[in-house]
Image 1: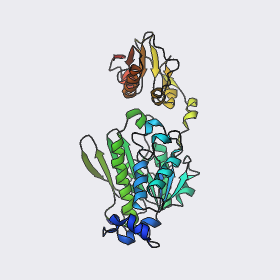
Image 2: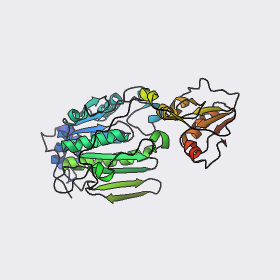
Image 3: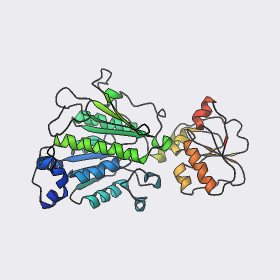
Image 4: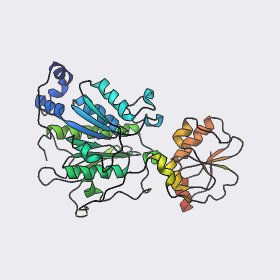
Amino acid sequence: MTLPPLVPPVGELDADGLARYSRQLILGEVGVTGQRSLAAARVLVIGAGGLGSPVLLYLAAAGVGTIGVVDFDRVEKSNLHRQVIHSDADIGRPKVDSAADAVAALNPTITVHRHALRLTADTIDELLADYDLVLDGADNFPTRYLVNDACVAAGKPLVWGSVLGFAAQVAVFWDAAPGDEGVQLRDVFPEPPAAGTVPSCAEAGVVGALCAQAGSVMAMEAIKLITGIGRPLLGRVLVIDALAGRWDQVEIRRSSRRPTAPAPVPVPAPPDACGSAVSTTVSLPEAGTMFLLDVRGPDEFAAQRVPGSVNIPLPDLLEGALDGVPNDEPILVICRSGQRAEVAAASLDARGYRDVRVLAGGLLALASESVPAQSPR
């Protein structure tokens, strides 16, 4: 169904605006009226990462007048293959600052509000009150459900995207949509998955170009909602399979399983608080006298570890953090599935380490005892 414009047109376009958006203005569906709606729109983008990067750039390029960006992270080198709004010179800077500068460089007529904060139940409602529309590119489930529930309570539309590996999904959730088309995240996924059951991008990997595909679709959905053109992805989930080159859709509708009053979803503790997690250990058969190097994140290591192993997260190792790693004894590299361990082992090989091996299949395979414990390189 076509929805009415989310944002009424306001003001007039000046000569600069007419020139800047001329190729967009000649589209009959957009026109001057639609462009004036875009200029009046206030859009909140959750995350300035893989999805947030193309979303922010394309919203700014399209002329969305006010953009808020929420992110409390700093730019790391491992971000740059997919988070294209940042550059090598931005490493170490707050992502909200780097993103705001990139938007200003692209379109200096846009107003950008920087929200360098962690979203919580205490901060989100006041934040949402200033915006017409929310785009969610968060990287964790608690934040996603927190944003969804706040949008439901505020009656605001939510453009949602998700990427992992070679797969992506995009949808529009709007519980209070005109007519009887309203759906929300909990109609598709009633509750967040249990901790540890779904790998993160740091654990499973992600292709940068896929983030661009999904993020540009999210930006287009926002433009459609703001201007009231086309058929938004409301009641549908777009499913992208990058390896197969397939774009499919799944129809969704209101679910009777939807919680009537969802409990607040706790936001995970910052990384430096992960050491307080309850730790479990796993056995590593036939490890011998090898140096055990775990390249998972500190939170994963705190929750489950191999006795005697040393934790150097993969991004740190790739940056050369190798203090204490010996070059005179065999090294066994450990991670969740084996993928990060392969990358770490290749880095160690390139740095001259002579005997580096990988725990084949990672801790997942070790738990099922389905593969050998050691995989020579």
